[in-house]
Image (cartoon, rainbow over all chains, first blue to last red; front, top):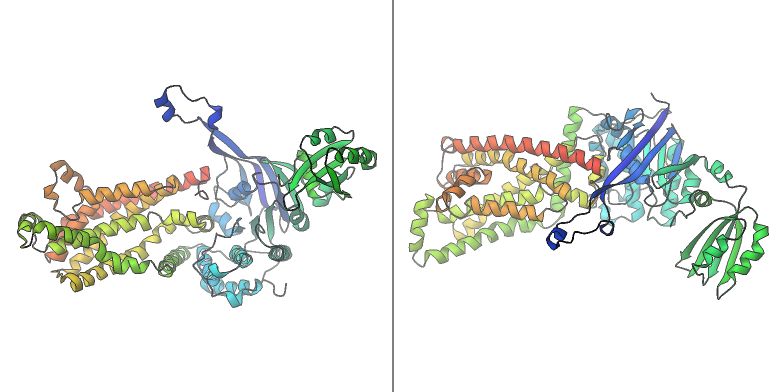
Length: 345
Length: 293
């Protein structure tokens, strides 16, 4: 048996994509223009990604939407075939031994529509237990155990369409655990959940680790990745740009001060002036729609030296500083440090 | 967390793939199809209203064309080879309904899963992917048997229609038709999952069946080239054999040539369905088309 639960080696996934129409001149002949299609191109969703995950480890794949997290998960769970590179789950090759891989995995993909809403919670689990080839007697015991664990026993015989989003997600998680798989892939498991339901799922993830499961978790919530993961791979534009423990990643910018400001009346042209201040290494801005103000993150080698000039620059031409803090670096700051953009851009 | 899950120090999967396990999975797919079928109340319309509604339009048209004394229908009956023109139309339209709903139900089985968001969760399991396609067939076949029963009962009540049926031959027609129609449905389902839009295909196929297969008129009224095409279409053979069995009490020997050809078509369409599905499944994995809708 392999030392690693999951191994990805030089994984590449390219999708066919037609070039945008504006990039290809249309023919002059009106008839030819009618049938004109831009030439086929390619889009690289995952670009030479490699990592190894130890048994019993929680590994977080952190990145913004469209970074390649879900494509990576889909290749690992055999839904997509890699363009090149290899991956092994529990020692089995994802292309050549796909069925062995499926037997070793429990998977939660993003979204709550991956179960049948016209079936009850119990019927869903019975159905998927049969698909996972679990012997009937074992399945019955396992389903009771899971419903109890998820605190869904009293609602098990109700149609899923009557469940809350959090309850549906617990049925989805139960489905992933049915076969007691050694490895669990969780793709954005708390997406769209209210804070309480999300906290409950996070507690369960930690509990599953205690029981010996290996977990690969993708998320774009940095707090979630930080709280749950033993190691984190930061992924952007299909590439892993950093891979380490959360504390080691944050250590990378320990020499930097992180300044977080809230500004009213911010004008985009001010960004250039602030970035040109001596000592500012990174800056990203984000509009907080709910509060009607802008949040500005700055990274600098010496906050004390630049603060007077910074405040002077911000409090001009009708803009004014609402709040300013020098904060402890988070994983989001690591991401900003590495890419020059925010996780949720 | 108050309760914990049973686990050992070394986790081993409970999944055990065997032939029996695949069979159980196939049973579960049929059971799930059944639950979905009965939990959407539209089945009442399918069973009770459609059997009488659809043939009724042709029946009233034929009453109008035949005239008050029925004199206009004489020529039709000569060519059709039966004097039971009501039964003639009902058998034709029922087979058309069968082919039509098959294209919608079996042909859209995977597409339905794709749109519902459940296709990927099914395909992540170790169950053979072809079973998901096969599993959509049995519930549909049984529901069509119910449809035929309702058709007979309703036409008996409302139009006093009588059949001179050889039930054994009729059952043989039904069984011989299954491979051809479902093979066609499987091929269709595979195309639908990649094209992601299938209405045009459905209209094309059911239009062809409606015109070429003689659902309400004898093939003899069509030009020779259309008759030649019709002979290659399974619904033509199903309709012809079903009419002989349902209206003329034909024995198995009489309809045997059509049944043998139907079984041959069935082998061809099932093989084509399987090959198309395997190709499309691989293509979907390469292009990432499974979760697109």
